[in-house]
Amino acid sequence: MSGFVQIVTTVETAADARRIATALLEQRLAACVQIVGPITSHYWWQGKMEQASEYQCLIKSRQDLFAAVEAAIVAIHPYQTPEILALPVVAGGSGYLAWLHAELRPETP
Image 1: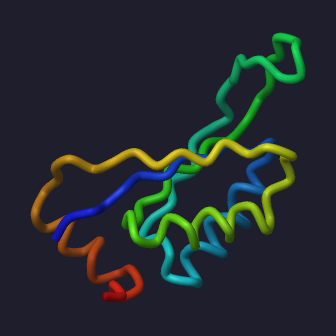
Image 2 (image 1 turned 45 degrees about the horizontal axis):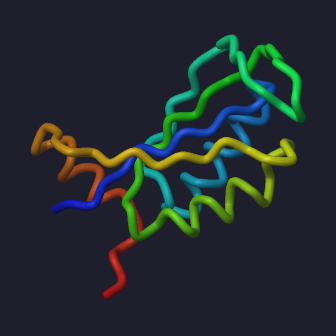
């Protein structure tokens, strides 16, 4: 088992975060989505430094599902340019990774 990723996105409200989590879980694109927040984000947007209160979604998935996860997030995400980053899982507990594998859509060859 390999190719697991943690995908990160942020949204303005807890309700938006729950909508994303539910959509990804229902489609078996994620085995787990942790919602953290509120957090404070500091960033550049359209030439100005901004600050916003946001909720962060930590999405447990697989690399081969990234395009489908991205499309599902973009379809319901309220931001013009949402943060969607995939970070590779380089190691994990064998039991957790087995559970993750079992809860996601089957891999397509």
